[in-house]
Amino acid sequence: QVQLVESGGGLVQPGGSLRLSCTASGSVKSINTMGWFRQAPGKPRELVAAITSGRIKTIADSVKGRFTISRDNAKNTVYLQMNSLEPVDTAVYYCNARVAATFDDYWGQGTQVTVSS
Image (tube, rainbow, N blue to C red; front, top):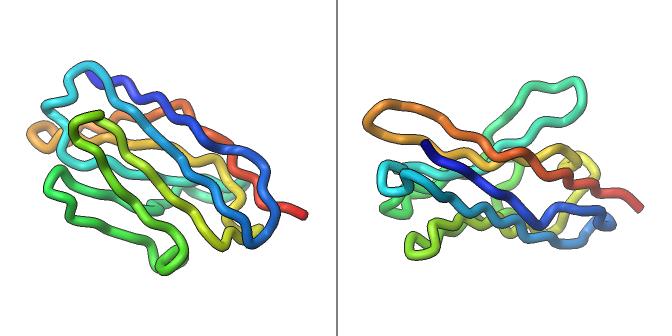
């Protein structure tokens, strides 16, 4: 089992920045990929960014050039640096961890990001 704890969401004005953090505990050695998804009201959950243990990254086209994902394997933590935030980025952001051997997915509780003036 893997537990994920997120932090860093909040309210920010358009053009502002936020940094989300997600720390894993439990069976962390089994984790391959960690990432961030988001879900806006009335919309399906979508991938924002993901990073493997070897630091191979996947970034959604909608956030390329604005968001950066990074990972500290020693701290079992993944970060999402979000710059130039826009109102369309408003959503609940969920941390995800995937176990490669079993394709099991684990989810954090979600953190609200609201971009509004």
